[in-house]
Length: 175
Ligand code: 4NP
Image (cartoon, rainbow, N blue to C red; front, top):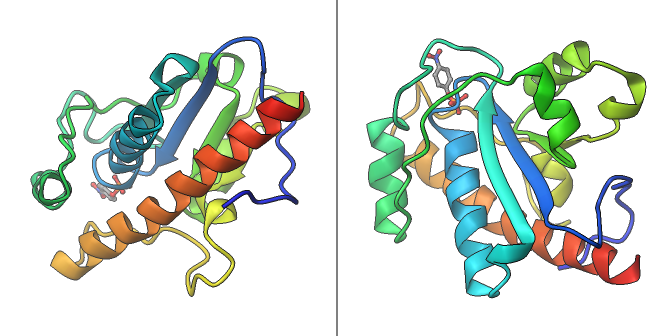
């Protein structure tokens, strides 16, 4: 689904678009978003046009693979999550065209650390890409939840990654 009213000022048309998914720990939601987005892009034969990464606002788990529960749930959907956890760094704001936070705390942390007001415009919410009939307006942290929390995250990400792909490709086509 193409989401018409989103402001995405930095989407390039002449080179691959660079997208960074961000959550708190970078072991559950954002590496799952990264893995799912890479799969979506691959299915559309567009991998050469997208650069996709993820990072966390905290560094508790730097160097770790994604949470084993998230890897298990993702694998059931055919996704192998092999991202190595890292913290968001200042150069990410220059490098990436879109910096996508999973919840409002991620967004406010990202905004606080933005090196300039212009670069702050790259920050968007993952929920901005949910289909309009979604009953959620953020991607909830599954860390202290059971299996259903991880499944919910993957369901929300499946919807958002597809709409993100369609919307960015539409913006690029118009430029
Ligand atoms: P994430 O989940 O932000 O989706 O990676 C969390 C992972 C770890 C912690 C909190 C949330 N933690 O407190 O260690």
